[in-house]
Amino acid sequence: MGVLNVTPDSFFDGGIHGTTEAAVAHGMQMVAEGADIVDVGGESSRPGAEPVSLDEELARVVPVVEALAGHVRLSVDTVKPQVAVAALAAGASLVNDISASSALSEVVRRAGAGWVAMHMQGTPRTMQADPHYDNVVAEVYAFVLAQAAAALAAGVPEVWVDPGIGFGKTLAHNLSLLHHLGELVEAAGELGCAGVMVGTSRKGFLGLLAAGPGQEPAPLEERAEGSLATAVAAMVAGARLLRVHDVAPTVQAARLYRPAA
Image (cartoon, rainbow, N blue to C red; front, top):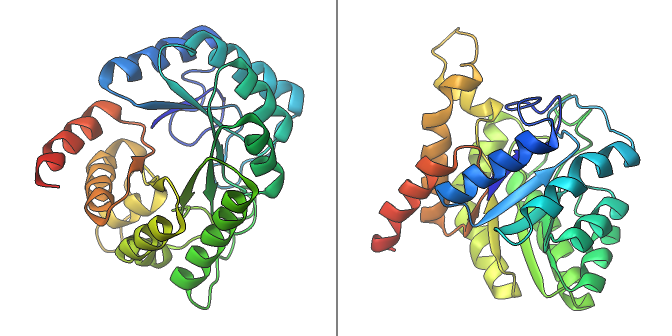
């Protein structure tokens, strides 16, 4: 899943693809690089991000979805039911829902589309203020599996779960979730989910890992290696969908891994 942010403030590529023309061109580039899905988002979910209005998000997302429809499977990254409805009507067939809300799953059910239920503690504006769990693995996995079970029981035909790496988690939380990812893969499979999605691409915890003792976190430009390493680790654990900014190298890594799978 290639990330296509049509926003001015996303943490990695905010503003780069801010016009419809630039976003469509980048989407087509990711298709050429081997993306199976392009995930179009019109509202940043980076730590500290402020929400945008419904009209603004619709204006950013719908024209891009319409232009890319027919070239690749499209996902819309939104928490607004109205945006999901419009994007699905424009040609998307998957809703990537960081809020894992029943309102979004109902939109998806009515459309006969797919849904990604992700875990997030708090909101993008507050989620990294002071993340706390008694047992991060148990709590995160129980939440996404419960949301998935409810959606499947309601008739949503395709449900993915995502542990929400970086969304209200510390470095230790993220590493623990990745270490135990195989448990989520197994449980999701038993439940009847389409699979597990993981998104670690260029995230802040990779900057912390890349930094030496006492050093500042590595900048975004120096997190590609960590992104690839965690993508491969997720594949080894059984994840079936990787949400990434760097499509071409991740596709190459996936092709190298698959023969051994």
